[in-house]
Image (cartoon, rainbow, N blue to C red; front, side, top):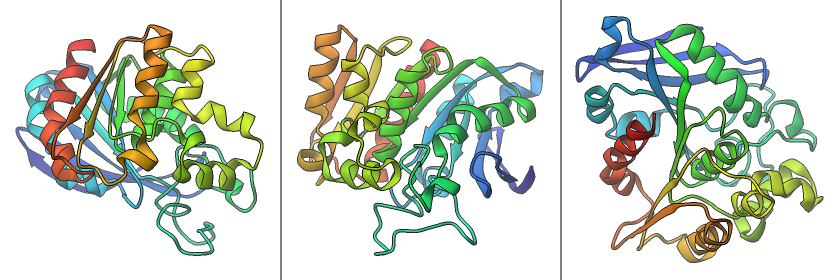
Amino acid sequence: METVSTTKAHGGTLSVHSHDSVATGTKMTFSVFVPPQASAGAKLPVLFYLSGLTCTHANVTDKGEYRRACAELGIVFVAPDTSPRGDGVADDPAGSYDFGLGAGFYVNATVAPFARHYRMWDYIADELPALIAANFPVDPARAGITGHSMGGHGALTLGLTYPDRFKSLSAFAPIVAPGQVPWGHKALAGYLGDDQAAWRAHDAVALITDGHRPAGDILVDQGGADNFLAEQLRPDLLRDAADTAGIELTLRLQPGYDHSYNFISTFMEDHIRWHAARL
């Protein structure tokens, strides 16, 4: 692991690191905020944040406004990239923003040529948490996960699949049912092929329908003025699935907010406090 940069913030340390990933076969980059409580030698709760389409680790690192709350509450905040990158990594032949580089959708691809490097599920579920636990003052038994849009999809599916690993779960404007919306149809077909049975493992609504449950309750914030709300995000499907399954879901439609980091940064502190209370 190489340290790319280190800076001080709110009494803690914000750093960016790169490493050679076994899961993706590429160099991966992530940022970590370690709050000042770590100076006392404590093992702290950790929150993983998964970003959305076109993003890298830098979007939330620069614009997420999480550091003050994490410093107050003693939460380590980890922000990985959204896909493998580098020479030899396949991209969307059409060069679109919603597939390929920056759009890994947090799955293990099985379709060539993407299967070689696009193994973001293994990276987030296994490799990155182990790397963080080995190099930073975290308590792996107190890990939570959140994310935005495509990253909200990743957070929900990972949190539902591994409730023993991710003890708290939230999302900002997540893609809750990729098997039922255009973004998901393109990504899941492109990475996993046409067998829609394989898609269900990466669809939060399908996972709940199939019996998966989170470790506890779920918080979702959704902007009411989000341009993607009706066609791509469909939080109503998550609400219906959670109600049917008896999962406690706090789904907040925030009037006037869009899909941007202006929305995310506004409610980030709420999410940090949500996770802190559960971790």
